[in-house]
Structures are given as C-alpha cells and as structure tokens.
Length: 120
Image 1 (cartoon, rainbow, N blue to C red):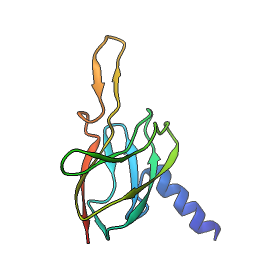
Image 2 (image 1 turned 90 degrees about the vertical axis):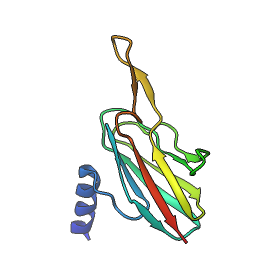
Image 3 (image 1 turned 30 degrees about the horizontal axis):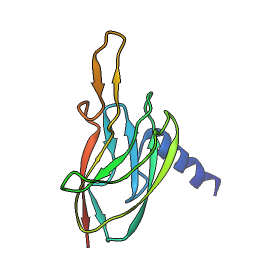
Image 4 (image 1 turned 120 degrees about the horizontal axis):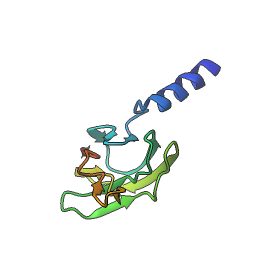
C-alpha cells in the first residue's frame, strides 16, 4: 500500500497525468488527455506543478465556457466537475499578468491550451 501511495505522489510531483480526467498545469503548458470516453459528468483532477497560479477553463467548440476553476495556486491541487456532451473542447489557462516592465503575459499565448475530444 505504501509503495502505491509513494508512486502516486511521485507521479503528481512529476506532472504525470493520473488518468482520463487528470490535468497537470505547468508554466507554459497543460498536460492531460486528448480524448475522453463517455458523455456524462466528469470530475477532473488538476495539479499545478508550476511556479505561478493558473486556472483550468473548459470551453465548447463555439467558445462558450462550460466550466472553470478558481485560481489554482502553485503546488496546489483542485477538482472540477463538468457535464460534457460529445464534441471538441478547448482546455486553457486564461490568466493574463503584467511583468515588472509593464508587458502583458498571457498564459494561453505561452502555450497553456490543448484540445480535448469527448466521445460518446
């Protein structure tokens, strides 16, 4: 039992997606599934392994937000329950910050987005 818990903790610390509904937020990317089976309420587990806070926003193919987390602090985990129909969704971080020189830093533009297909 202890070995399984240790492996789980190592996987989370290294940002390894833990299953079909798991997403890892990194500074500059989102790791997770490209395809999810079944249309029903899904419970996504989210691990932020980056240095900065991030969000996870799920939008349908028309760009309508269907679910979103609050800010997930660096090193924190979150859970997001969302009802999904078959289709294509974008999963993004929509944080925009400003650096010390006044430049806008858009997490989406830095690569924090992916497409996920939900099958019936």
